[in-house]
Picture 1 (cartoon, rainbow, N blue to C red):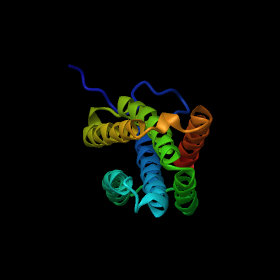
Picture 2 (cartoon, rainbow, N blue to C red; picture 1 turned 60 degrees about the vertical axis):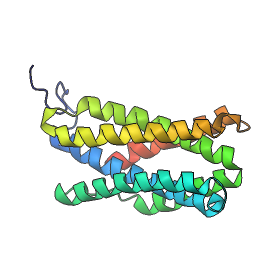
Picture 3 (cartoon, rainbow, N blue to C red; picture 1 turned 120 degrees about the vertical axis):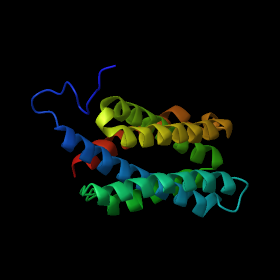
Length: 185
């Protein structure tokens, strides 16, 4: 079997393998930070309900993901996104706002975010080569946990949220914009 390298088949103007890996670590660090803040916002509203333990479980997994990318930021000397202060506020606000709409809306937020992250992590794993196998394995493991979070949201009536499709589309669009901006800024 032939070895595959990161960003193999890139075109002129595409990021170099080093730039691609730096962007991957930067955006994933930002995303996991934002995800942790979303759960903190949801817990501020729903923490004393029966959903508190569910949200704590998902937040704990996001913290492991964040810790991994924080370590990689330091080890690989990758500049973190300059937007962390914005994601600090925006993540908490999104989590709290959806939780204030009720547990179903909080779960709809989880489903939307995790579906956007699933697509994002899938694309990253496909682009990372054998030269970045440990990073690819982390991303694939985290992707599986994000899909678990999506399934938890679906099991807790996310799709019964009023205007579910509209809310989901808006959150996914916001995630995609945050991903593109955080890769570079």
